[in-house]
Amino acid sequence: MTKTIIFLFAFVSLLTNAQIKPGQKASAADKKKFGGYTVTSVDKAVHLAKDISKINITFIGANNKPVKKGVKIIFDNDSIIPELSEGGIFSSELEPGKHEFSFSVPYWYKITTVPINFKEQHIVYMKVKFEAQELSAR
Image (cartoon, rainbow, N blue to C red; front, side, top):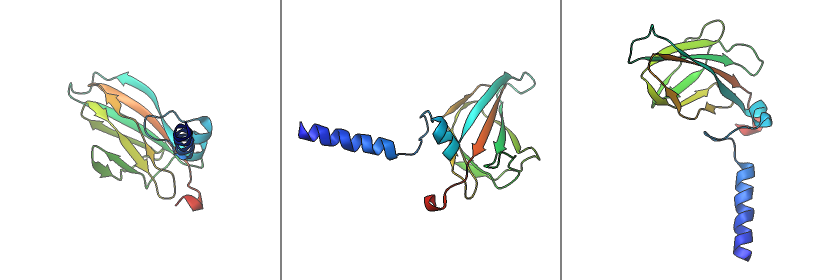
């Protein structure tokens, strides 16, 4: 009985101290503190080739303004630092299938998505909102 109570105490302590992990639902407070992403829409795009899908990402900074540079995107074991439009938008074609993304900007919290399913001839629109890290978190 004592071992069970100690195990439950340790388990609950670990859960309450963990940051948001991919696949977990973030509370409103966590999104405000760590930032987050939202898939805003998925549209059919018959103008794309049959074996192509597309992603369109809008990056928003901690100051609620578009991020225009410095974003690092990691997906499928590749990383890029893309050119972004004045509105903080990045767009690219990619192969259909499941893809997981990580987004980072120096001094802001890193954001990692759950695997997102990209269907051929579809465009996935996503919004990524960064929040600044606290000095003690670095």
